[in-house]
Length: 286
Image 1 (cartoon, rainbow, N blue to C red):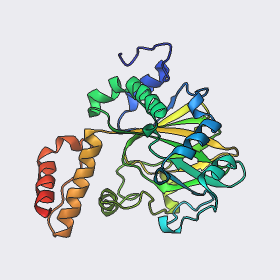
Image 2 (cartoon, rainbow, N blue to C red):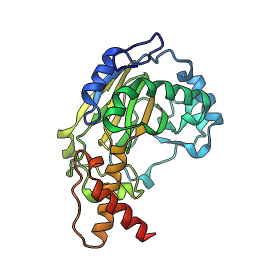
Image 3 (tube, rainbow, N blue to C red):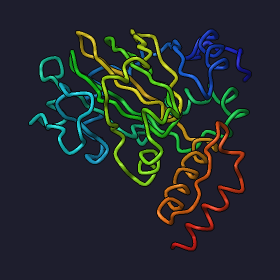
């Protein structure tokens, strides 16, 4: 299938694929989708999934949070995950079901979505690896704090509205190099917030049927609207995202030894000598 071919079951319309083609992988971009009536994305279907989903693949807490909260300070909501979903209208909570692709039905949905994107993605950043899907449920007015994610990501709005406040990738004023290095060593996704950062934000409002392409590690925070929000996020890694992580990990090793750091370019997958250096140093360390 080419980037402009559409079948009766296509879930991304031609204009969404054209917008993806223009933006991927470096810019965030509003897209559209055709998932609003999908039976797997109805509230009861998601609640049923949560009841059989592994406990360690779910995260939920109060959703009325400051933008820069530390992970260890995030308050629990005092409910079970099933109670959280079924009372989401009133409990002021945020919940994510991680790795829903482990369920066969949701795995098939993820595969079908990524198959539509692969003809655009693969020639630019290589095969779509480490493919995952996440479902977000948020109460009215909830906030997802300022953070970044390591994957290529398309977040699709299913119910309700939210505003994604997106910030430039690779801006050292927002994410200092040491923070990127720590992130790839396992530090939490939440970032330090400064009110001065708001001048760099692009607020993107998402309504049902809309989506947003998010570049790797683009800092962002999310403000939910005045109704319950349901979103599906589909993610993948690429040679580019892996290479970017390797180079920051390499710099972490070099920094610890007082050695000169490498520059992380816009195309880190091409920095083969530095990537080899990282692998050698890591192997020697092991």
